[in-house]
Amino acid sequence: MPRAVVLLAVGLMLLLFGVLGTSRSRTENNDTLYTDEEARLAELCSSVEGVGRCRVMISYEDSGYRSGERVMSVCIACDGADRAAVRRSLTDLITALYGIGSNRIYIARLE
Image 1 (cartoon, rainbow, N blue to C red):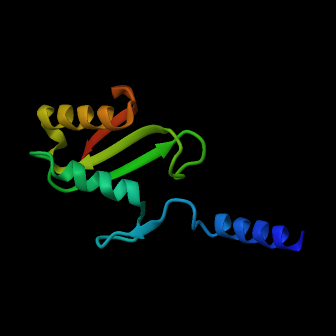
Image 2: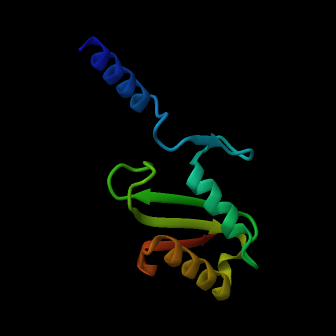
């Protein structure tokens, strides 16, 4: 019985310290925290023709930044957002990746 209590306590500590959740990392340009998924998505979006520099924020249905939750919306700020072809490419990419409608995707010009 004491072994089960210890295992339960260790599991709760891991959850509290975010070891089992999505890790976060600081960007080189500023002190904003990004999830690994946001960083990977920003890198993917930047590789689309005409996008240029890109920042991404993903919101999830239940608990904000928890990985594994269903994606509710995606916001993208990029250099090429003033071009319709770039906005369409990014919207198609996000729709294909997360299965969300275009009404849940916002794309703005990066300042």
